[in-house]
Length: 243
Image 1 (cartoon, one colour):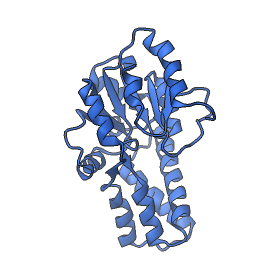
Image 2 (image 1 turned 30 degrees about the vertical axis):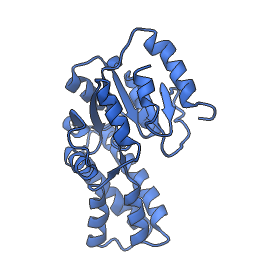
Image 3 (image 1 turned 90 degrees about the vertical axis):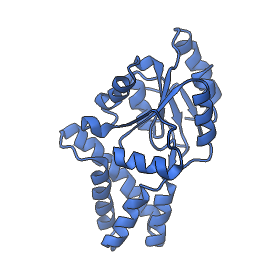
Image 4 (image 1 turned 180 degrees about the vertical axis):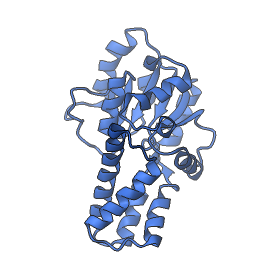
């Protein structure tokens, strides 16, 4: 996304979204703009020295491939099971000795995530502006609740929504519809904050005003659509929702 800065995105979005008289009433976050998953992958390197990065990349890619395949085929399993199956596959592909103890440590690391440094201040600003906040994630409700507790963010989100409730995964439109149904707002009134480029594209296709927290500095998904705003973190989110 060369040249597509947060500032230019704000200006572009405001000319369409704000000019049409739309106003954000709520913000829904994917889990990972809030919770930093890097300790999981640090642990992978600790358990498998010299192979942790390769294991992590294969695990993560297979994790999302499985969610998409299960959503398309209508053979649903929840994200916890998909994550474990992906880990077993990745370790087997790399011929790593994934003992039960190592598997459990890696899986349980997903229940102890901490927030990115900019998160508390961003949430405080949004709440102070009267916005309703929520999570809308492929993670199970138990995973989300555990991460909220681990992060010390209890009470920050009025809505903790898992796509598990409709037995599908983003970017299926039914997954994004969970937010509309729970908040009882128009989709144009709900800003969605994505972590992955494909999720930003899916949210935009669905009709959410979309802010991409591109923390991994990835190029945009080449799927014919762009988020309304892109930034490295949540610092500029307040300026987007309250221009």
